[in-house]
Image (cartoon, rainbow, N blue to C red; front, side, top):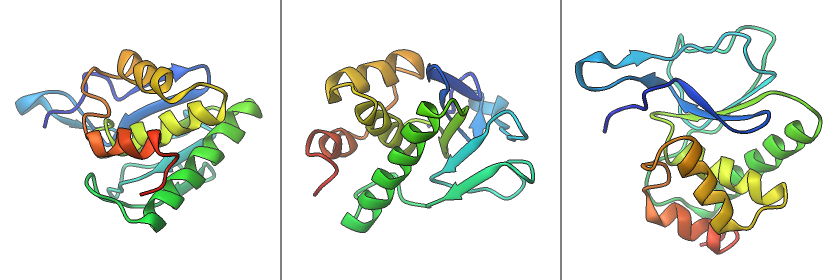
Length: 149
């Protein structure tokens, strides 16, 4: 799968979504986060991709495939962290490998925490990040079921 054309997209004020790579085909480039955000939530990790020292950073690596209940619980915890940070006025970035599914799961759930219904949240993620976001239909089902298997 190719990466998105931009390193990150603002899904709603203060809530950003992206990946560790950007570009297409032979032009894929690394995305390095420095101090652009107050909070970075990573669902995939590559060394050297930041964030800068001093930026709050949480990592919970998980697959872009079927998740276990503990992984869903961790994604839900990340969504609450993101929603709380947005409420507090903190610039928040959620990222995974390409910035489509795992980050989409957390961002959509954060939008639900902020008052949207699931279908609105999924539609907003796809409209703002990419129509390919949340193309893992299992992740949409996790959202519809309230983050339970």
